[in-house]
Image (cartoon, rainbow, N blue to C red; front, top):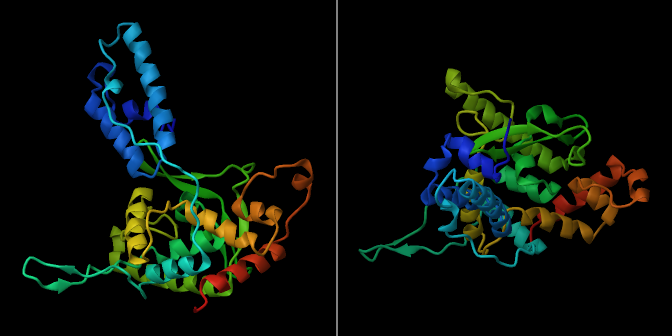
Length: 308
């Protein structure tokens, strides 16, 4: 049975830690891992309280002498309201992802030499295009496979996600009843980016030969394995610096997409694009058509990639 990545049981199961061997250092390491994979401070604290409560019961039943979860540091709660990019800022972010702009300042060495920071790799550029252009969640973007793309219809099916579960990268399918399972139209320029990306991946596969781990996913490592969400997050933080942006959650790209769409279309259409469950009975019986979504998403991508 899979245990969600933030579930307290995952701390014990992942490393097969005996209850009496659980230390404050191990609990702290688990908390740090939750922060590193992008969990919010509120989520980390709520999960921690569940663990602490479980260990309090263990102390009461004399299974352990003290609660190791009491002596750890937790992330500070902050205002987790989403921050969204303006259209101009979103354009700069995509250009930085494509490697055509870098707003980071050079640094001075001990020998008073001025050097530029290493260039940011563009391997994940297409991920950011999809997150902003389609409003995908991080795990949904990383979970896309080539079989999900209908090249003739210019659509992509969102039906799985990549997550970290008990410290392992796991690809999981959405159920047929999940609102997140949806088909989205792809703007022609974005479809061409996908074609070019596939050609590059085919070349990588040929070079790796038997060392390639075929999973059929669009976004993979250099040997074909799924991309770890924490690794994408680390790349994204460097991307923000290249784009001249301060702290911005990766999930806020989804909020940015929704906000920019809100300037051109209805809430009902935005909910369908984002994979939200309809909020009213009327909305549940009112279908959003693919052509409606196509008009909105193609217009958005045209604006995102237009020159200033």
